[in-house]
Length: 278
Image 1 (cartoon, rainbow, N blue to C red):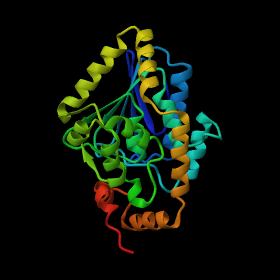
Image 2: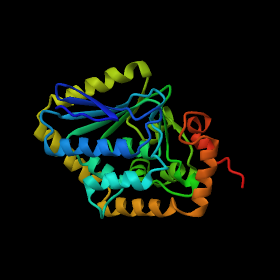
Image 3: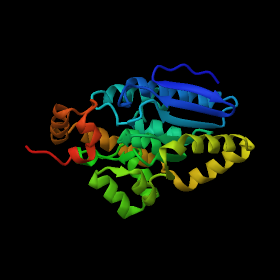
Image 4: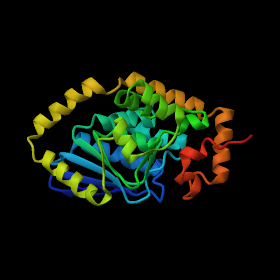
């Protein structure tokens, strides 16, 4: 399978496709990355060839994906519409398509996965993370919005009501060990063991008869994934809240302190969203 993208580097080994996010130091989910996700998903749905498993990781050791590009919400939403149509145009509906893609998907996380970056990982079938440096968070309520690309749906199903409330309304960062204990991710592994573990698992699954794997994924998805209407509702709510004056004020405050640039705010975003003085 040969796929050329500007912000996702791919290589294939047997039935495993390794897709590495490479959209700058923060891997913001913006126009280029959404465009490439649309292209990749289209290929996997229409002509996956002998690909059985996709492993998604990051070229940055510090950021799996920081979050969406908050300066380009309308633009990346328009790109998402190419995959899901104008009625359902949203990152949430695009990631809903990722969750249903007819191959197994594994997120391999080093560094920070927050907001839409965490929701990208949550849309995968499994998440494995480096114990030493992986960080997960949904910071949106700290700015006056909410997770709009599947975070509420996935975390409530995985963590249960009370822990999901803590994660979403508390808007704090979770290290890999705590994320594992809560059920946010499959496993936290030592960084030195992460690549080998994920590669072995991916190749093991890719070696099984594909019909059984696909049938098992469909059955699990039917029991565990949200309806399209739920994802659509969260996306619409996010798009409305992100435009409110109070939300814009908080985002402008964070931007003035360095949001969307490598630095202290992005490193400790769970802390930064609570540090707001009018």
